[in-house]
Image 1 (tube, one colour):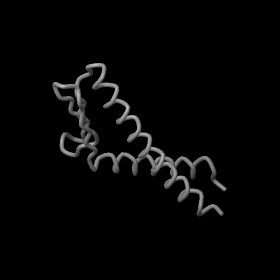
Image 2 (tube, rainbow, N blue to C red):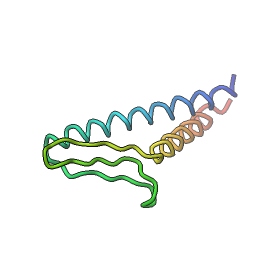
Image 3 (cartoon, rainbow, N blue to C red):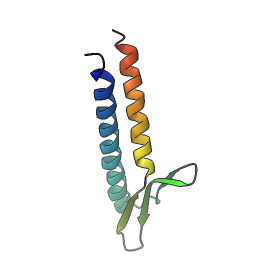
Image 4 (cartoon, helix red, strand yellow):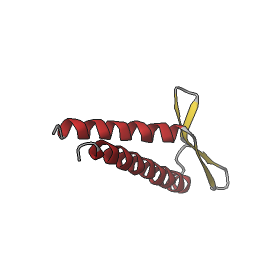
Length: 90
């Protein structure tokens, strides 16, 4: 039973973080375009895009998700699995 704990923790942590980032970035893009917030460009090491929002003059917005969002989600899943192993040593 112990061998399933880190696998389940890794998969659930990865999926949860991935979907939370998608939802929160979409909310930022949609509310930000209505409120006049500045465009957001998040990237890893200035090369790998995580999220990019572009707000045009007429109020429409575009969202772009890059491969960095997968790396962040995988890192979060790995951290979740390591913490599950640490908290459940048996």
